[in-house]
Length: 138
Image 1 (cartoon, rainbow, N blue to C red):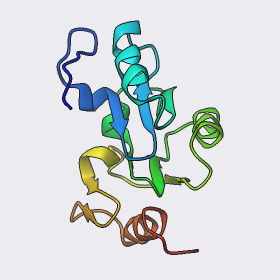
Image 2: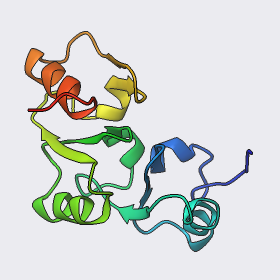
Image 3: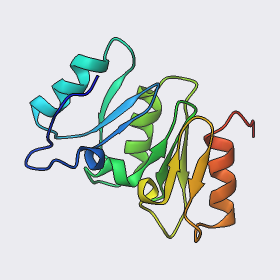
Image 4: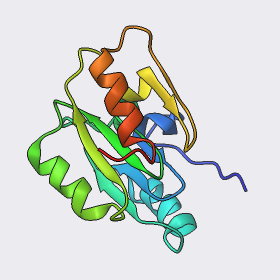
Protein backbone atom coordinates (compact mmCIF):
# COMPACT_ATOMS: atom_id res chain seq x y z
CA UNK A 1 0.00 0.00 0.00
CA UNK A 2 1.18 3.53 -0.72
CA UNK A 3 -0.59 6.71 0.36
CA UNK A 4 0.19 10.33 -0.42
CA UNK A 5 0.52 12.92 2.32
CA UNK A 6 2.23 16.24 3.08
CA UNK A 7 3.60 17.90 6.18
CA UNK A 8 2.19 21.41 6.04
CA UNK A 9 3.57 22.67 2.69
CA UNK A 10 6.39 20.10 2.46
CA UNK A 11 6.41 16.83 0.55
CA UNK A 12 9.50 15.69 2.51
CA UNK A 13 7.53 13.52 4.92
CA UNK A 14 10.56 11.47 5.97
CA UNK A 15 11.96 14.60 7.62
CA UNK A 16 8.93 14.85 9.92
CA UNK A 17 8.26 11.17 10.69
CA UNK A 18 10.16 7.97 11.54
CA UNK A 19 8.45 4.67 10.71
CA UNK A 20 9.74 1.26 11.80
CA UNK A 21 8.13 -2.17 12.02
CA UNK A 22 7.13 -1.62 15.67
CA UNK A 23 6.48 2.11 16.14
CA UNK A 24 5.93 5.38 14.32
CA UNK A 25 7.14 8.80 15.44
CA UNK A 26 5.39 11.89 14.07
CA UNK A 27 6.52 15.48 14.63
CA UNK A 28 4.65 17.23 17.40
CA UNK A 29 2.47 20.03 16.15
CA UNK A 30 1.90 18.30 12.83
CA UNK A 31 -1.30 19.19 11.08
CA UNK A 32 -4.27 17.06 12.06
CA UNK A 33 -4.37 15.56 8.56
CA UNK A 34 -0.71 14.48 8.65
CA UNK A 35 -1.00 12.83 12.07
CA UNK A 36 -4.40 11.31 11.22
CA UNK A 37 -2.97 9.63 8.10
CA UNK A 38 -0.43 7.72 10.21
CA UNK A 39 -2.91 7.05 13.00
CA UNK A 40 -5.58 5.75 10.61
CA UNK A 41 -3.24 3.36 8.81
CA UNK A 42 -1.01 2.20 11.66
CA UNK A 43 -2.77 2.48 15.04
CA UNK A 44 -4.02 -1.12 15.06
CA UNK A 45 -0.49 -2.40 14.39
CA UNK A 46 1.79 -0.12 16.44
CA UNK A 47 1.88 3.03 18.54
CA UNK A 48 1.89 6.33 16.65
CA UNK A 49 3.74 8.78 18.87
CA UNK A 50 3.68 12.53 18.52
CA UNK A 51 7.02 13.95 19.69
CA UNK A 52 9.87 16.38 19.23
CA UNK A 53 13.59 15.59 19.34
CA UNK A 54 16.12 18.22 20.39
CA UNK A 55 13.24 20.71 20.45
CA UNK A 56 12.73 20.32 16.69
CA UNK A 57 10.07 18.85 14.44
CA UNK A 58 12.61 17.33 12.01
CA UNK A 59 12.56 14.04 13.89
CA UNK A 60 13.27 11.92 10.80
CA UNK A 61 16.63 13.65 10.47
CA UNK A 62 17.45 13.67 14.17
CA UNK A 63 16.90 10.03 15.10
CA UNK A 64 17.43 6.54 13.75
CA UNK A 65 15.78 3.34 14.83
CA UNK A 66 14.35 -0.08 14.14
CA UNK A 67 12.11 -2.51 16.03
CA UNK A 68 14.90 -3.13 18.54
CA UNK A 69 16.02 0.40 19.39
CA UNK A 70 15.92 4.13 18.88
CA UNK A 71 18.95 6.44 18.93
CA UNK A 72 18.56 10.16 19.60
CA UNK A 73 21.16 12.94 19.79
CA UNK A 74 22.55 14.30 23.05
CA UNK A 75 20.57 17.50 22.47
CA UNK A 76 17.36 15.56 23.17
CA UNK A 77 15.89 16.91 26.42
CA UNK A 78 15.24 14.71 29.46
CA UNK A 79 11.52 15.36 29.03
CA UNK A 80 11.59 14.29 25.35
CA UNK A 81 13.60 11.19 26.23
CA UNK A 82 11.18 10.20 29.01
CA UNK A 83 8.18 10.73 26.71
CA UNK A 84 9.75 8.39 24.13
CA UNK A 85 10.59 5.74 26.74
CA UNK A 86 7.06 5.90 28.18
CA UNK A 87 5.42 5.70 24.74
CA UNK A 88 7.49 3.12 22.85
CA UNK A 89 6.92 -0.64 23.19
CA UNK A 90 8.87 -2.13 26.13
CA UNK A 91 11.39 -4.12 24.02
CA UNK A 92 12.58 -0.94 22.23
CA UNK A 93 15.82 0.35 23.76
CA UNK A 94 16.22 4.14 23.69
CA UNK A 95 19.71 5.63 23.84
CA UNK A 96 20.93 9.21 23.78
CA UNK A 97 24.21 9.56 21.85
CA UNK A 98 26.92 12.15 22.42
CA UNK A 99 28.05 12.69 18.83
CA UNK A 100 29.37 15.67 16.86
CA UNK A 101 27.26 14.61 13.86
CA UNK A 102 23.92 14.96 15.64
CA UNK A 103 21.51 14.49 12.71
CA UNK A 104 21.58 10.72 13.24
CA UNK A 105 18.90 10.05 10.62
CA UNK A 106 21.21 11.59 8.04
CA UNK A 107 24.29 9.68 9.25
CA UNK A 108 22.93 6.18 9.87
CA UNK A 109 20.75 3.98 7.66
CA UNK A 110 19.45 0.82 9.26
CA UNK A 111 16.85 -1.88 9.32
CA UNK A 112 16.46 -4.80 11.73
CA UNK A 113 19.51 -6.61 10.28
CA UNK A 114 22.20 -4.08 9.39
CA UNK A 115 23.27 -0.50 10.05
CA UNK A 116 25.35 1.55 7.64
CA UNK A 117 27.08 4.47 9.31
CA UNK A 118 28.83 7.66 8.25
CA UNK A 119 32.60 7.20 8.06
CA UNK A 120 33.27 10.04 10.52
CA UNK A 121 31.10 8.78 13.39
CA UNK A 122 32.99 8.08 16.63
CA UNK A 123 33.97 4.48 17.46
CA UNK A 124 31.92 4.83 20.66
CA UNK A 125 28.86 5.75 18.58
CA UNK A 126 29.51 2.76 16.33
CA UNK A 127 29.46 0.47 19.38
CA UNK A 128 26.24 2.04 20.70
CA UNK A 129 24.64 1.50 17.28
CA UNK A 130 25.72 -2.17 17.37
CA UNK A 131 24.26 -2.74 20.82
CA UNK A 132 21.08 -0.63 20.68
CA UNK A 133 19.91 -1.56 17.20
CA UNK A 134 20.67 -5.28 17.49
CA UNK A 135 19.89 -8.19 19.78
CA UNK A 136 23.24 -7.83 21.56
CA UNK A 137 22.85 -7.45 25.33
CA UNK A 138 24.88 -4.84 27.25
